[in-house]
Length: 211
Ligand code: SAH
Image (cartoon, rainbow, N blue to C red):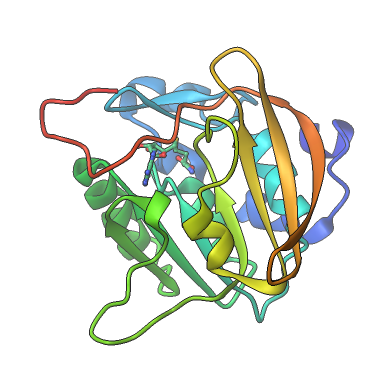
């Protein structure tokens, strides 16, 4: 009801958010705040996005149940779970192994069987595995902020006619951008709204790294 009042009109997005138990994805300490419209800490210095932002990003992608999606920044797995309810398959990459393992356990618990998650550097796109390429993807969602533009590897893994939603900018002045790949090297770009995300960082995180 709250998201609808704030302008989320897509019934499929509202339905998916209603069916994913956000409280199960957040640490015990903040569970009582799980159904409030705010970002929350999930460990390793990372945060689960505010539901309104999850809804805006999901709605902007205009998902179909035939879509194959790539997500960069699995975090606690909440956004992946919302996506998994709305499309054919979700491929998701997280650079913090402990977060990824927790998210995978949650997908198993909730029997979300159309999500494939790996620990890797998502800025490089989905890697070829066992001789199989999953790219190109119908849609790509990046849930950490790129400094000035989307990583080229991600633009390359987008289907012609596909779109990518990604926060861009340094801390303090980020904007959520929707890129549409018109053809091989031509993109249209639309600014959606100002946002605050943790930064997109290179490489798989070291064990000692907290942020
Ligand atoms: N979608 C998540 C939000 C997590 S916050 C959720 O619903 O909980 C963003 C996440 O992006 C963090 O967990 C961070 O570790 C991850 N991240 C940052 N840079 C990355 C990269 N290059 N590859 C993969 N994950 C990355």
